[in-house]
Image (cartoon, rainbow, N blue to C red; front, side):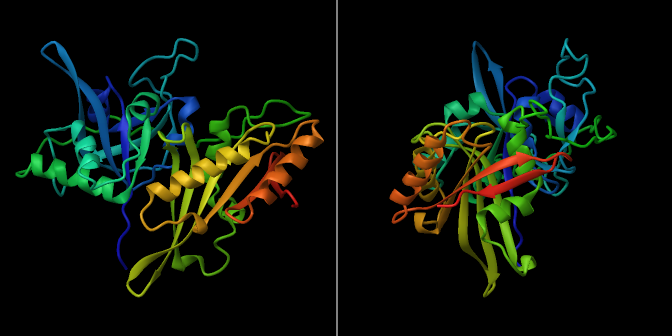
Length: 343
């Protein structure tokens, strides 16, 4: 079976030396959703900046392999949080230099844009993503070309291994279930809601309804917080479903998610459609007819008109798009229950 590799770009303008020294990368509480989609065995590159004379220039280091699942540990590594006394970036993964070929020299970040200009990649990376995010999921071809560029820059390799000072850290579990109130429970942060779904991919699959039987034959490629510099904003989750047949991976369908921790508004449907169109542009081999758009929110508040309006809009777009709406609730044992809106 053809192996599958996932690539990520970690963004830290000033803390690359610490990341290398400790063999760690971390994010803050509001970005926990970005780190939970990184898994053991994935490849990672690190985007950072360096002072060259009077100028500050961006570079990309790597490759690194992720050697842990995401975990929680607030031992101070990068910057102390005065409120908690721990680190500002407690949601972490452990990383290591690749023993097969260590690349000591970075490449210029300009290489990303060169590849896009050459038409070799459909890049989701733009300046706003590099400023506002800590983790960017790379498309497979995108990751492979960056890896190739780094190996070309370091054709003879290096023996400069990461000291891995942080690899003995205790790996605490990440629990996103923090709710606003007891009487009307909703996730405190949208990043926590997204984290919950990324941690519970059976529920994610149930919402898309693509995988039903013989799960071992399928592969689900998950991307989250995908930048859309055409549509604006970011797609919360894109799930690409593939099946291994005839010695190759064939795409079956795609789920595109827009998540709201609170009340659903009717214009969310138009936002979801923009994200469906963007996904069809971005991912090779995917057409919008293959995509199921899924919007999930707590409820419609006290406005019955919102529910009726969303139903009307889904019906209006039915000929062009496959759309579905769910609400979620939290039961007495803090389990998350999803209910489909009947159209």
